[in-house]
Length: 127
Image (cartoon, rainbow, N blue to C red):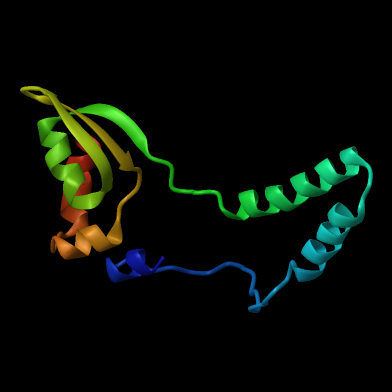
């Protein structure tokens, strides 16, 4: 939203939520499940307790920015490298590059390249 405002868009908030900062919200859950795991003599209960603890960590450790890999033209790649986070690329032949990137515009990369996003977005959409 800040990016849109910085580029001249007017934003009207219709509704939303406010969350207060909270610390150690899972402490009781973790301690309870961990004690159940440690004190259980039943292997199934131990296994379920272990899974509950591991799944909690896994759920909050998910990487939301998943990269996409595709073959693009060198022209498109030259634009992508200015506005997308690229994790790797390989030149295949004269006009084709295999590139892995995070979809969506990367504001830090755009700012570091002093790019006017309004001008480049049309070129990017035209691929």
